[in-house]
Figure (cartoon, rainbow, N blue to C red):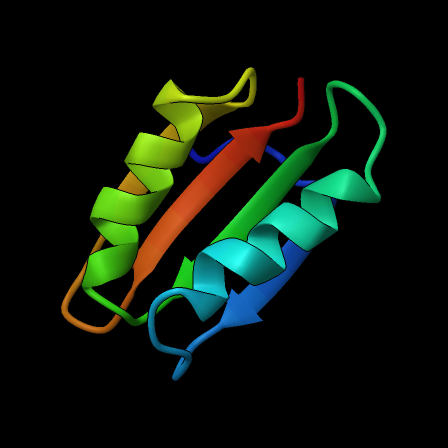
Length: 77
């Protein structure tokens, strides 16, 4: 079961680096411990989001992908 999200951002169709930049902007406007769900179609987002989480205090709670998109649930630090 997927975590509950406070905000959902559909970034389908955007290419690197836009999905990560838009997610960072959304996280900046959120309160600590809120969860952002991101939907992206850019295959590069998988690498970008995991690297971002490793180098920030934010945490990817759940990640999944299917034939059409990549899904991230990120808890703001």
